[in-house]
Length: 206
Image (cartoon, rainbow, N blue to C red; front, side, top):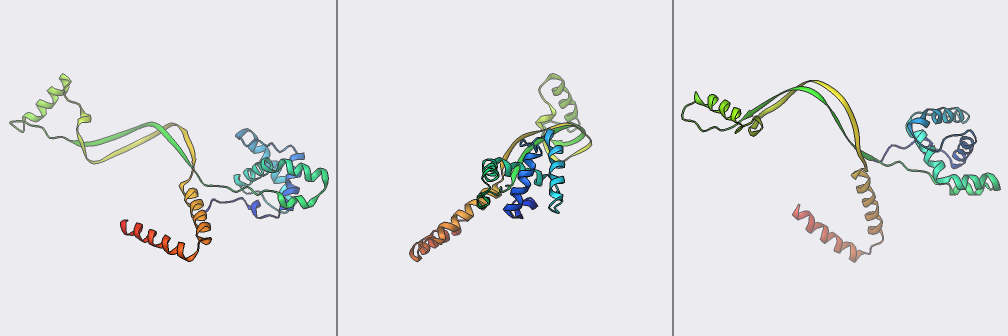
């Protein structure tokens, strides 16, 4: 499934040009950030209403921030020359799916269930032996192995942070599929049969 696109991606380029032109003249900030978002959202909402379009969410603000970024020179040229034929050259930005890797940390109460094999001459001596070894520094609780799922309670998140952002494998696989489909479409019958044999051999190994 492809990434969700802004509703504006389906609008005619003429409408996108007119909205963008108005955005630039109304000081729509070309930087996408938490500091500029509210202002940009308000400006875009006011202008979009002129075209009977309601700004829905973040993707709409992102769309025009990127649209202006990649088309700014052409938008300026169209405005100066009044050559509307150039509108067809405007590039529609396409959203992709990304993975955000992040972590959280905090405190909680937990109960861990562990086991360990202990050699002893008497069952009653196991507790005494382990307590003595722990006191002497020869044994610690982390040496045991888990025999039941750890129970957690009383979560209290302290903070969180974003580690990294990367393009989703879904996008990469989809792009590879499109490239493969294009290559296959250009192959002749002999090449297709050879490819089929290679695929069949690979499938037998899976």
